[in-house]
Length: 93
Image 1 (cartoon, helix red, strand yellow):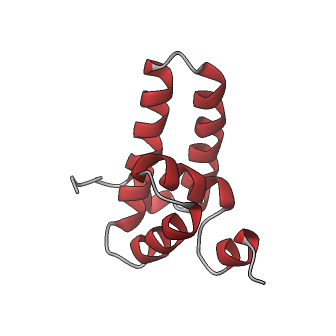
Image 2 (cartoon, rainbow, N blue to C red):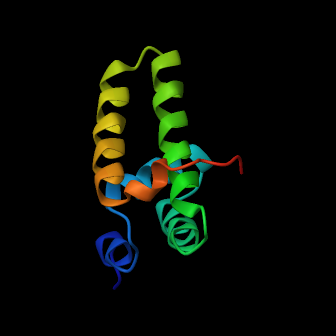
């Protein structure tokens, strides 16, 4: 049986990054992994993912869920260290 870790290993994303996409798009993790893998191969896909994580952080802060916002910030920090091109000229999607 294929696990979520197996699916995450098939993408350029970590499991927490996939979970952030799932949260943002209201998708099951498997579908979020597929979306993340697709975006990772698009010209500005990493910028889109970066924006999703930032919006998740903003939403958590608006809910006064500082603990979740901190966890998402750690996800964003790792994501940006692995994909620095995500910060360049983020265009609207």
